[in-house]
Length: 270
Image (tube, rainbow, N blue to C red; front, top):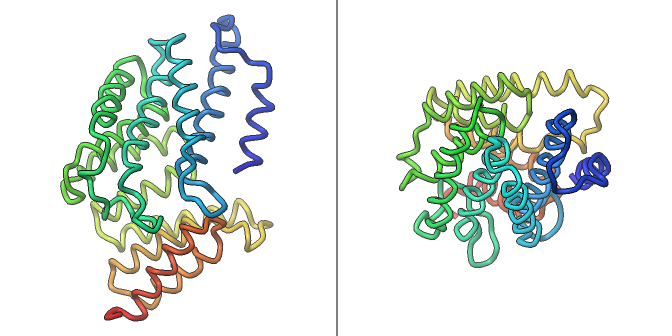
């Protein structure tokens, strides 16, 4: 992730937060937004180290995105990205426990979510969708809004989320979006259908990166596979997948969470 951010920064070195000429506006704006997106993601879920959340990075990304939006208030991509950040950051108070342990979205105490931020983010998401053809950021913001609007995990509108993911993956073959879609497939059609989607992703990823080392394996695939295998009633296979994911991630909080999931399946009464 650090390398990706560095490459993105080099791409936009010298870019100023002002209206560029029409000729290169879209290209420059896309590069700026990609940098902000990467910075926020690294802040919200750090890819390595002892901390799950880096508040400094997440807040700075939001601040800078607000600055871009002041310059381009009618640009749907900017509004959509800001909406996505605000809606995602709104969950921060509930995503870690007293000892810093990771709490997954479906187990979070939603009363702890920042409802002011949820309201702002939802309004921004609606505005972004009205500002022109829906792009990646607008679609991701709409998905985040559906999650945040659900008062309980079981109230989540998964069919609508799946429909949005279908649009998103058709637009952009992003592995994270495709994995999110696999989760939505599982929630709508059952864990077996979700596992089939995950297996297809793993096969495609293996074909595209046949030269990759084991250490570069996408641990999120194994983490999602473990969750779906657990839901499908296969605790042994789920435990293996969780441990593979824990061994592959560089994030200490994520590794601890995944190992706890595996241990819980090995000692269900413990």
